[in-house]
Length: 255
Length: 225
Image (cartoon, rainbow over all chains, first blue to last red; front, top):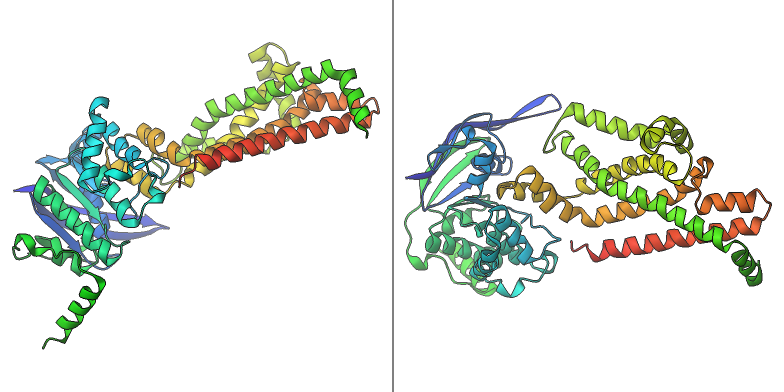
């Protein structure tokens, strides 16, 4: 079953009299419980396609069904409610730098109208889920890139979304941190059953966590296919640089 | 100028100087309140109606920008005179400290709204995008995200504005606004007591310094970016 389904959505921009077709009419099903990768070079329209899913960008045409409801046809208030069931994280994290880690997650709960008395408990819950319970009083500027992205994940997860949209979540991170973050996403998918859509230009990201992948080129989805099922220990434990480099060299050497 | 002379000026004019300081504080204070209460919403409106903004509206954008630009380009003294009818409508007279506050407040609102707009432009677009993705309404985006992220710029802009209000407040002596600047002109300049004028200028310089230091410090303290 599909939690989200795009039907012939397209998006074009007009700048200085020039029209640019960012996304050609695309139809796509996001299966419930899976991790759907969208891969392609920069400028292929992947990030725009992702933004059509929660209507951060309104499609020129087509329908966006989220849990059977066409978001193109609901009121603004209903759209905002739907967005609380769709978390999103970004390449540049997009945290509020003048709010603490606690404050960033709290903002999401305020928007979700979570009663005040439940907020602190929920904040502790999501922050310990991403392993940052000791950073509550810190400001984002005091955190590393990986930690910032974890705060962003905690913020996105605070309102218990069913779907998590990830826009190049690891592109600003080093390989080691990328690995850890992918483990966190996998963990969210497996233990909480949250469906994930992840836009990336990194083949390795898709290889490691995706169950299905769509390839985009020049605004069109040119290929979609399933990735083979993998066992629980599919995600590698954190390897040292030495192991990673030697492992890679070894693999390339093999005939 | 000796310490004795300063003490002499002080004992001689103590009462008037206190009154002048009170008037300056009144005019600058009222203008600051006006700038905060009306300048912030106006600046926010200019920001959200701009092309590509959250409430993009070409007509409103052009109208508000033109209004603010016209007020800001008015030579202040002419604005004071030009606004007499409106001032009379609001306070019943065109003379006195309260009457002088009206044109001052108008300039304050227009000037600060521009600085508010600039502070809001500095907020990364991604923050707004994240807020929208969490289901924030436009009002929530402004309150819980834009103002929070732009707060040090808002404070710094207000500081710059207050400094210019102090300067403008000297001009309104012409309509009986009073204040430190007016005292310097009437008691110093017009009576050929240059040292009285100098004392008042020093007082205003000190006032501006204090405002600037306090403003910069607050702005730095609340900036966690």
